[in-house]
Length: 192
Image (cartoon, rainbow, N blue to C red; front, side, top):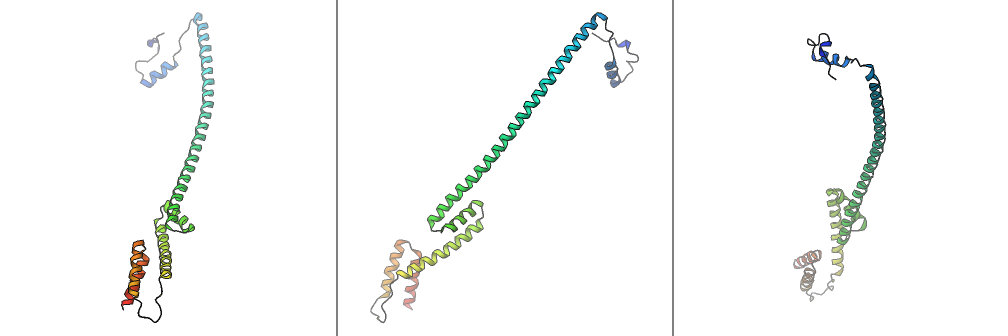
């Protein structure tokens, strides 16, 4: 049904906003025979609107459940990710600890050094390495001096220089650098 714009007074001189307002307020004269049809259509629109509202309410309820499920899934994922990162760190620490133990570190120093390495604290790693090397070198030197034969007292017929040279060659063959250093030092003291 078209609107006869000539029935709206001053329509041609109105601004766009005024025209929209005038058209919104315009009412049609409906013949009485069409009034029953209009009431039927209004009831159909009302029913459709209420059904749409009901579906929207159900959708929102489902959406809330979906959002809850999504949130729970996100929390579960974050928890698993945290646990996975912790397990990866534990694995790295265990691998490093095994390597340090194989090098001769004691249990506590190996654990401490492996944890520092996994955390990226290289200052702590190098401090622990220095401590290990210091105790290791002392132990090697002590062992080397224990195995060094003492020359017989008061005799000059024993050639200690050749004994030290023989021990030096054996230590070099074994790759025992601490013993090599000890025998070299002893040989140089013997020549004085």
